[in-house]
Image 1 (tube, rainbow, N blue to C red):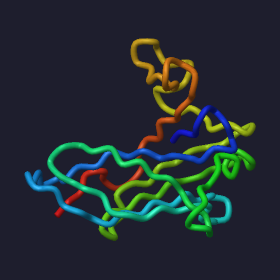
Image 2 (tube, rainbow, N blue to C red):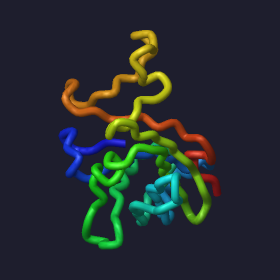
Image 3 (cartoon, helix red, strand yellow):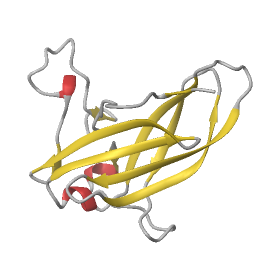
Image 4 (tube, rainbow, N blue to C red):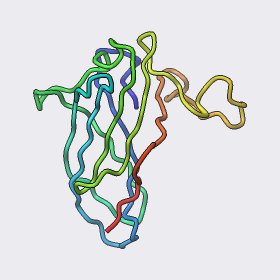
Length: 150
């Protein structure tokens, strides 16, 4: 999860890596969908749908969430403005492939797992992009499979 220049008024970006599990040499186009959900009330704050290209190599897919207006992007402030639990639900070809949890506390997305300050320096996942200026959050998958099955 990332938003530009640490600016809450910039759009949220969710990145996931996908691969054709069967390892076909030829790329396939598959529909995907992603939803950003506030857990407290189940409200979908944003969604994105499209086609992804899957082959035997891991590919980066960047998701930008849209609200009711398909031409507008969900701003980070929509999440940062209310402390609590949130989820990103990711599906490919109509099948759930991942459920990614995040928590907002004090208007900030909380670090998780090996990204936290108390992790040994050699094991820690760096939480800044671009030379330490802009923070990103690594969200472990809690359900589903990131690989795409036939």
